Amino acid sequence: MPVYAKVVRDRIPEIIERTGKKCTVSKVTGEMLILALQEKLIEELREFDEGGRDLEELADILEVVDGLASSWLVV
Image (cartoon, rainbow, N blue to C red; front, side, top):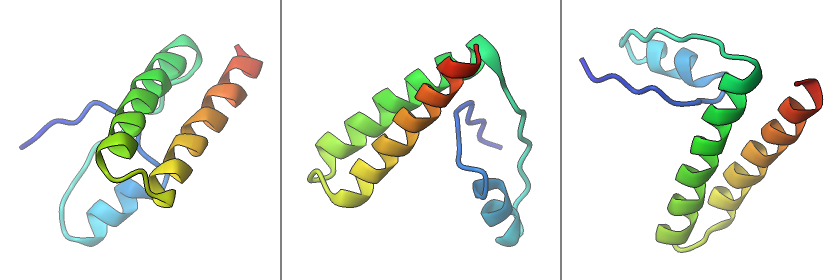
């Protein structure tokens, strides 16, 4: 079974389970969340650059930036 240690949107586990597959999720907070979101931002920027720079990828980047901004306000 593949292991993906990365930040996902809230509904991704639900979508995975709807297809009959299983997944395990963990919630992270504080510094761990900020580090995970920084990694996710790099991933999304890479996808944006490689994927023709479409609007959907840009929306993903903005969502991660919003998460980072919110997390820094809490830490």
